[in-house]
Each structure stands twice: as structure tokens, then as C-alpha cells.
Length: 517
Ligand SMILES: [Zn+2]
Image: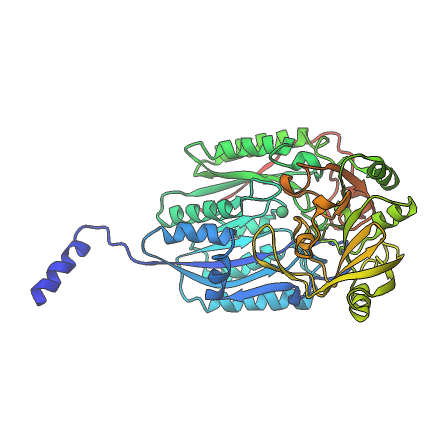
């Protein structure tokens, strides 16, 4: 028996390559804020998971973590240690200090409890801000370094709307960033970060990161990667990854509504121990972006004119109210387009979303079929939005729990009421919910295809949702996420930055980051 066991053991101990199991820590902090939304993002506005719950959640969606998990699971001898995940339920205002302190503490606690690990993967957005902390992601990565040590590799995946600070890069070994907008490559971005992490663990690569700050903020339809200018720029970045020493490349365009000192755009290139290549390519990416900055601005139609056009159009129309885009961090309570439709005696059928908890309460009190006389709009951001008076009938009431058209996960708009007033149908929610797809409408039995005009509170949706079948009009309405960036009043963003300032000449200055593996 003894001899048999020894024989079985021999092949595993023979030779120099004994692969021991490796432990990879996984954590997530994914949220985006708008500094101009007066409603703060509280701790309760995050969906927080710990330990194995994280993997269960991600197994149901095509996220960065699920992409990374596919890589980790297909590699032998890897143990994944899921620790902490905080995902904003929807976007919102600046996080109060007390709420970020709680996230920071729970993040630290979970990472400390992970035990020794060989590497770490973090999924982050990159565009949050907390009271007293302009760079929460940088702070969380710093804490991770303090706890996990200076020597293990970190790979981090980001949203391209992130703000890529030096503090973040000082903690990272390698990063990946989305290449699509509207975003559809969450999974692939996680997969790329995880692949780099495993290659670092195997000592196959020694990443060097080059970053170039571009003093420009961009917006508008040219950012749609499938059809716009930005798609060509991203394609150039992706081609760098085909170089034998190219590991990762892309752009960060920042969320123009996250008013923090480092708000601007960035070109970033990660190479395998090739600092000159990284520097040169990042410089070229930045220059191309800078040259196209003027064309990557939103073309907006003044509110009155936009409504006139929608009412005169023979087509179905989407009035795009990106100024009140909940997924960019706005409050969702603007009735400004609705007001103008009423002013112009709208007779076309209209479908619109609106956050107004008091109106929903009134609808629940009246019950289905009940008439109500309500004041709508400006319930959360009264400085920007005025009230509109409306007599309506309650057509449907719900608890606001529904499945996302995009991800299949459960979203929550709080108690929700469908109200009808003449040709106007309002899906009125108690709390903001993502509106970058049609989930809220469809879940409440209202299909935009059945209406002449739909108010779309998102800068862009996937093409099939609206653009394929209706006329899109980008409206210059007031709002905390207006693409009319000069209207917002940035106070923290480092100046000058285009288009808030005119910049006559600019030269790219690459910065290199390497943890010297
Ligand atoms: Zn984004």
C-alpha cells in the first residue's frame, strides 16, 4: 500500500514545476455620481454583497466580475476569494462622508479577513466622489495596498467614464477599460484584466502604464462607438493590444458631471516592459483625441424648438432629455419637456418617465381609475426644475420591482404609478432608476413603439431601443447632467479644460507608472 501511494505521488513531485494553488482576491466598487445633483448617494443606495454572495450575483449577469471569473475558472490551481462588492443601485449625488466611511470600513474589513492572497482583481467604475474625498476609488485601492502589501499584483477594470487619477495608477499593476459606448463589453473588460493578472502571477509580463491627460470633456452622438468618431479612436487603441508587447489600451473620458480636480479625459496604454512604446502610443492616442475634441461635443436643440419639431414631425420621435439622465447621476424629476409639450397644446401621444414620490402617493391614495390633481416635477432638484400642474387618471400601480431589459437583474423604482392625462402617459416613480433602456416603460405595460413621442432620459441607448425606428432630438433642457457643460458651474475641476475654457495650444505629456515587477 505504501509503495502504491509513493508511486502515485512520484509524477507530481518529479521535475521542477510543482504548481501550488494560488489565491486571487476579488472586490468591486461600482458607482458614478453627479456633483450637481442635490440628492446625495447614501449607503442604502448601494447594493452591497460580501463573500460568496458576490459570485452568485455575478453568475446571473454579464459583468466584469463574471468575465474575470470565466478566466480564473478555466485556469488550474486558482482559488477565488470574493470579498466585498458595493454597486450603486442607480447613479446619484455626492456620497456623504459618513456613508463613504462605512463603505471604506467594510471594504477594509473584508480585505483583511481574506487571509493571505497572491493577487487581486478589482472591478471599479472610476467616477465617484464623496464629501471630503475627490477620489474614492484611489482611496480604496490605497487601503487595499496597505492591507494586501506592496508585492502582490493588482489588476483593475474600469468604465471609460472613469477619472483615471495618479493615485489609482500608483496602486495598480495593470488596468483594462471598456471599449464600447453605450457599454456592452463589461464581460470582456473583466476578462482582459483577469488575463493580465494571471500572466503577472506566472511572471510572463512586467506591465508599464503610460497615461496622458487630455484637458477636454466630450459629449454627444460622436461618442457612440458603433457609429461615431470615438469608435475610430477606440479602434486605434485596441490595435495597440495586437502589438506583441501591447497589453491594454483605451480612453477614459470622465463623467463630465463628477466635478473633481482630475476631471478630464485620458489616453492610457499598458505594455509589457516597453516604456517607450507605451509612452509613444499614449501620446498618439491623446493627440488624435485632442484633434477631434470639437467634433465630440453635443449638438442640442433649444427646448421650444425641439418640442415644435416633435409636434410637427410625421415620424415617431424620441425627445432625448440627457440633462436629467438618471444613469449619469441626475435626479430624474424634470418635467421641463412635459411643461413645454403642454404649453404647445400637444395632441400627439407622449410617454414620459418622472420621479415624484408625492405624486405616486397621491395616485396610490386615489387607487386605480381614480382622478388626481397633482403638481409634478422639481421634487428633488427644485433649483433647476419647476412644477407642472396636471389633472390625471391613475391607470396602473406597482411596487416598482421589475427586470432590466439589458441585464435581467431586478431594478427598483419604488412604488410606481402610471398616470394618463389626455395624450400624455407618465410612468411616475418614487425613486430614480436607470433609464438607459426601456425597462421601466415595458414593465409597466407601455411600449414606446405605441407612442408618437417618448421622452428618453439617457444620453444614448442601444440603437435598437429607439434610434433604429424613430427620430432622435437631443434637447437642450435644464438639468444636472446637461451636455451643455458650461451651464453646470464646475468648481473643483482643474482648469483650463475644454469646452469650459478655450485652450489655444496643448502638448501631450506622458506619465509612466510601473510597480517594477
Ligand atoms: Zn460609463
